[in-house]
Image (cartoon, rainbow, N blue to C red; front, side, top):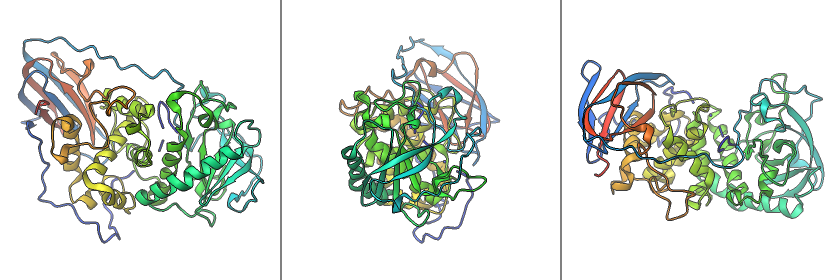
Amino acid sequence: MERKSVMFCMALILLVSCNKEEKDPDPEYNAILATGVVDVKFVNGTANVRVEKDDVVAVFSTASETEHSYPYSIKLSGVEAKSLVGNYDYTPLKSPEILDFKSQTTNRAPMKRKIDVQSHTAAFGGTGIFWTYDLSDMSLFPDLPVVQFTAELKARGEHCDVYVDVNSQTIDYKDAEAIAQQFDQVVFPVVTAQFGKPPITNGSSRLTILMPLAFNGGIENMLNPDGASTGLFQENDLYPQSENNPYSNYQNTIFLNIGLFNDTNSFYKDKWRPILSHEFQHMISYGYHKGKEGMPIEEGKALLAEILSGYGLPEGDILQWSNIMGYQYYPSVISLLQMDYSMDNINGTYGMGLLWESYIYDRFGKKALYDMVTSSLHKLDAVASITGISKEHLFAEWVQANIVSSTTSNKIFKYQTIDIEGDGGGRYFRPLIGFAALPQHAIPETEEQHEVPSFGVNYFRADSSGELVINGNSIKVFVIKKSN
């Protein structure tokens, strides 16, 4: 599931955990500053500090555990040696729009009849009737209709069943077997080892993989050029059918776009493989957190699952590249706390999550990540409990890592999974450009009004030397000497 990328779920309440290995954050810990980073102090809501050309200014907040945003003004006065602004141009991908949508739509087709499909007991070669979204008319988004379709069980793996729309002319038994093998041999062992066990639904933890034609607008030889979703997990399927949940398939279910499997576009070659990991991780995560995580965190975990399965950005994935570029291009509207996607920058929702989860994984390792994602705590409370570092200080260190990763050997500020300002040794679609390297992110010479959400950040670049003046409350400011 994606819009110009892929999909899903937060509430910051301190809970008592039953996990004996979890510990309270150390109250004596203070956020560490990288070499050359200045923590700018405010006096009566105003901060003044000298900046030099090419310094990076990070404006962020950790003042609230909600999606509250804080206004501020910023300008660079007393400008010396005015410089030219760079001309880097971030252009959207010339590809079908990859749409993300929630499992809850508001204008669904009327239910025909109740069906209780139990694919894990179906005979090989048999059929089942399922519910899916009809993506034929993307102008209806987000109120996409729900329709029924009939699918044949074309492969049975050790941990999964693969059902293909009976009207498909291209997905044969061999194809379905390849999908089942991918899940059994790669997806299941990798994702369960790193993220936990799948839920038990309707008496089984077995996964049903559905490939309906309607989910790709009736097209099966490529992604729908009018808009598509690469895959989907929806939590409704984990609960029985009811008046409030009439379209449940009531089993562990993920949807795989039938057109994605057959797409000959080199950008999407074998993309269906990591999408299986992505959607399966969503299912596992929901089993532990029941939709109480924020969208960037949820999507970040699912994107990291793709990477840990051997795919994603380190292998040149264009959609993950687009996610991170989307966040680098326009980070200020997105918060780790947000409960939905940023429709102003849906790519950025994924990008922030991928950066955050990769940073946590690189810094604290596999066991810590596993403990976090299987914790009974939600949002950033789990990270704080497992690491012993307050979420406010950990976020402040991540804010710095996004700028200094390529210029430091300090593990606290170092990405390993992602080449934050490079091309991954020539594997990325295009190089990642780093933050505050864009023309519109230059510190303005006349006062401008901005705002930043709690646990969100905005970056600016000093195109000239001068005095930085920021007015605001409940925000923090770092001046980062990028050359250090």
